[in-house]
Every structure is written in structure tokens, then in C-alpha cells.
Image 1 (cartoon, helix red, strand yellow):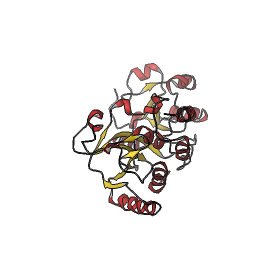
Image 2 (cartoon, rainbow, N blue to C red):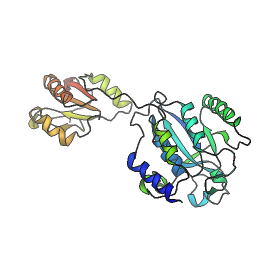
Image 3 (cartoon, rainbow, N blue to C red):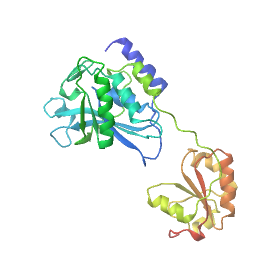
Length: 301
């Protein structure tokens, strides 16, 4: 690899390490891109605002749960592929397709950059037929620009995560090989839209709604603002005790993430509202006043 490429990778990593948007996966969509060595494709897609997660792996093929050593023989039919989970409200499939086509050479078969073999065959795999129609239309438009076109468009039949050392490879190995360039990574950062920043404002939630949200998979930090002797006499399972009189000071240590989902409560509701307002003034953006646990539907320890 040339010194220029090494420098470009280092600059990219120093500038931006992770651009996956930390949003709830509910409502997200999946698409799978094979664009040569998955190290660079994963790193590029992870930097797109609106991409929740990018995972390197092996798509389709003839073996279940193949190893890298099996795939590199070129006999298993797997493609080095990146699973891209994205928020369609922030980045569209069409935008991701445009980024993908801008980063590959679609005119060669079984090769990208210095990597040669069937495992490096370019392709786009989909799990939804509606997405397949969008992908095929984009591929036809791209095909018209080239004398040859070898990008395969297929439904996904299987996807297996690659070994852990392949995940975030260019973050772990800043001088590692990559067939993509700084320009590819820059285009990724300019694709999609960043989510609007959350506002720190007072919000209340009923015990019933809180229970429904937790049953649906939410995992909040539950804060009890009563005195320790009250907390010891009975509290919501899993709650932490940050007494109201010390709440803002203790929050600096116990609640360092001001965007974390937090439910805050007391016994009657008065202290929880006061505590919630205190933390809102400190900039907590996803904090909810649960009120009094007298109406809490869960058993109190």
C-alpha cells in the first residue's frame, strides 16, 4: 500500500472514528453491500450520518457460518459483504446506493483494487422486494454509464458475521490496508443527515406507559430520589438511589451520559418533579418524570 493511502486513512481516523448514529433500531432498514475488501466498505458506511451500524460478514455462499480461511479459498461462493442498518428518516436507500457506486469499479469481475478473487465480487443484496426494485433501478442507471457492468443484484440468502478482528478493522489498525480513499470517506460523511439534537425539557411519563415501553425493549436508567432509608425499605428493581439533596452532584458520576434514557421517581411524585427539573436544567435530554411509585405496576423490592 502506498504512503499516500496510509496517510489518508490516518487522517480519516483521526478526524472521525465513529459516525454510526445511536438511534433506536425500531424503524430501521437493512441493505448489504459487497464492494471488495469489507474493511474499507464497513468503515465508509459507518461514517454516514443515518447509518446505525455497519457489520463485516459473508453473504450467501454454500457453507453455514464460514470462516475467513474458508472464504478466501474462493470456493465457497461467499462475498465479503457489509450489513448496513440505517435510519431511513436520515439517509435514503438511494443515497446509500449512490455512495456505494461512487466507491467501486463496476467494470471488473471478481476484483476491487489489489484484491482478486470471487469473494471480492461486487454486489448488492436485499431482504425486501420493494428495496430490490429500487436497487435494480439504480443499477440499471449506473450500468448505462459503463461499457461493462459486473455488479450482482440478488436477494440475500444468508449473512454471517465475520470474525471479531475484522469488525472496525481500520479503527483497530489505522495503518491497515484499504482499497478506498479519503475521498470515499469524505463523501460518506456528506451523505445523509444528522439527527436533530435532542432538547433538554421537562417530560413526564405514567407508570403504565413506562411499563409498556420497557416491555417493548427499552432499558432505562431508573433513579430513586428518596432518602437512603426510604430506598432501603423498598424500591423499583434495578433502580439506583440518588437522594434529591445530592442529585445534581451525584449525577455527574452516576449519570455521565446526558442523552441516556432515564426514569426518575419518588414516593408521591413531588420530589421526582423537582429532581427532574433539576436535571433538565443540567442538560439531560431524555429524562422522564415517572412520578410516585405508589402506582408503579412492578413489584417493589
